[in-house]
Amino acid sequence: MEEETRRKAIERYLGGESPKSIYDDLKRTKQWFFKWLRNYQSGDPHWSKSKSRAPVHRPFQIDETRRQQIVSVREHLESERFAQIGVSAIKWEVKKAGIEFPSDRTISRVLCSEGLVKKN
Image 1 (cartoon, rainbow, N blue to C red):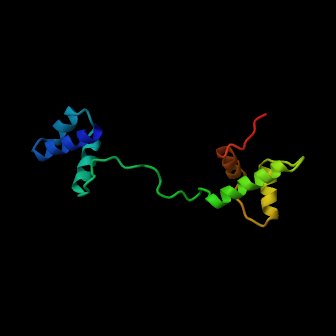
Image 2 (cartoon, one colour):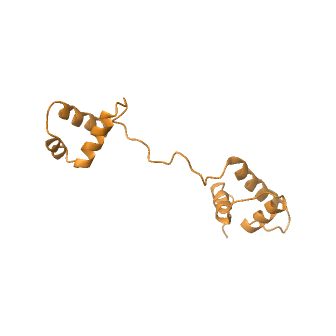
Image 3 (cartoon, rainbow, N blue to C red):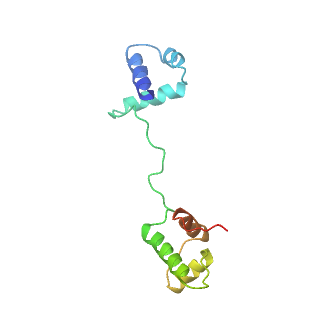
């Protein structure tokens, strides 16, 4: 629907209609109209499609091998009798293995996303 509105607005402009009458008639802003006009003029065949605003690169996202290491240490600690299983215990075990690890909050986030956090 929105994509069709964008195309029609540009078609009207190319037909000679003034930008102000187009964006007023469509109840859009001046910035909206000229954004889509610039996209049209770029020559991109998919100019009327919305583009994702998600970041292309996530520099602080933890990689899958580290995620698996956290999970495996947690599972190992759970199998031990009387062992602590929290973030501090996981970090301690990892440091003993000589592996540098991210912050406590990152470990906690991984545990939550894997469903390993147990509420009392």
